[in-house]
Amino acid sequence: MSTIDGKATANEMSVEERLRAIYDLQIVVSEIDKIQTLRGELPLEVQDLEDEIAGLETRFGNLEADMKRLNDQITAKKNEIKEAGVLIKKYEAQQGNVRNNREFDSLNKEIEFQRLEIELCEKRIREFTVELKAKKDQVDSSTAQLEERKADLEAKKHELDEIINETQAEEQRLEAKANEIEGQIEERLLTAFKRIRKNARNGLAVVSVQRDACGGCFNKIPPQRQMDIRSRKKVIVCEYCGRILVDDDIATK
Image 1 (cartoon, rainbow, N blue to C red):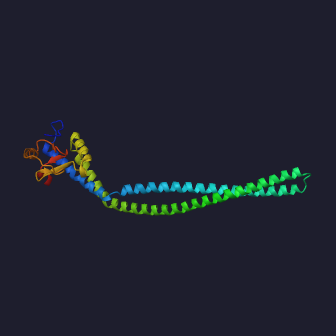
Image 2: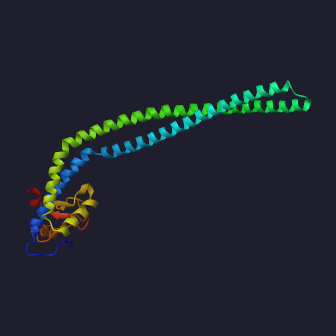
Image 3: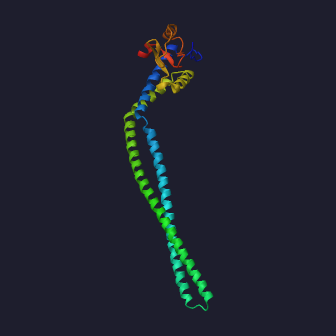
């Protein structure tokens, strides 16, 4: 027979008292679970939205930095075009004062080079302009998405705050009651309770015998074991699911 027993002491509660205390604790923590279930996935949804907004804001900042870089590059290329234009005029003026064809051809090559530089700058400006427009479109899309997510976050936070405000006082009362009961239960049994509860479906670590079966996993309990449970001489757990078992009288009082 599976049992969970602490070391006996002179001041230890009787097994029946321990069973009643652990069952009372289960009732209280189950009520806390109901409140937390009422909140559902809202806390996680709020966190996900906050993370998504942070990501969008980072992306928005990167896009703005890219747009500034592109605008600076466009401005730089326009300045290069102006400088090339000034040089072309300078070289054209110098061509009128050359002494031979070699000097003329040399100046002509400089003029052609500056014209090629202008064409290259104009090409780069067109490329930067196309890239800049794409970045602006991304900014517009990100801005709309960011505003939409912020509105979603505000709505979710409002919904969560309403639920918290409605349930906070009750949850605090139940938590205080749970702490009070925990203080009455020996450490070994309490540790077992918490371990079982963590792994059990619906957080049920203590269940009653219902229709000759475990109230947790619904496996049949032999008559002799049911008698042992009703005798309240040992803390007995279900051999199938490991939950602590109590008789129906404890569960209904």
